Picture 1 (tube, one colour):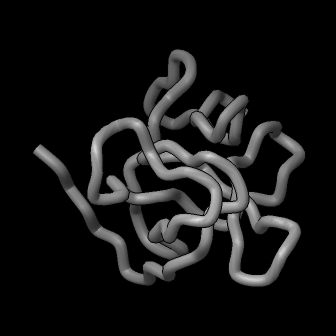
Picture 2 (cartoon, rainbow, N blue to C red; picture 1 turned 180 degrees about the vertical axis):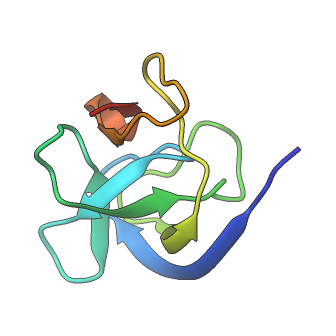
Picture 3 (spheres, rainbow, N blue to C red; picture 1 turned 120 degrees about the vertical axis):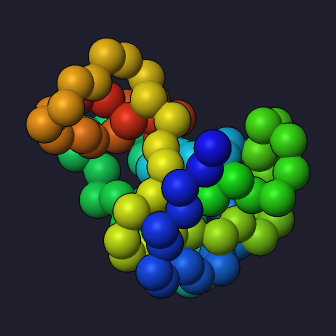
Length: 96
């Protein structure tokens, strides 16, 4: 069951391949995003299900990013209730 509580979603162009439910940061060009790849990246939101399979989108395609409220994120490690989350490789959520 999916619990999408997104409040503010904005479309961007992918400046790299992006998977569903990934943490993203601004890309190098206006209106672009790329996967956040490290804890120090300034993430801006989380991609939604992208409307396609788990293969994600490729560079240049449009991606919706949840900028505010609650979004689902793919985890790259063990997270327990109360843990703070940051971005790991390829935009997955890891314990901060």
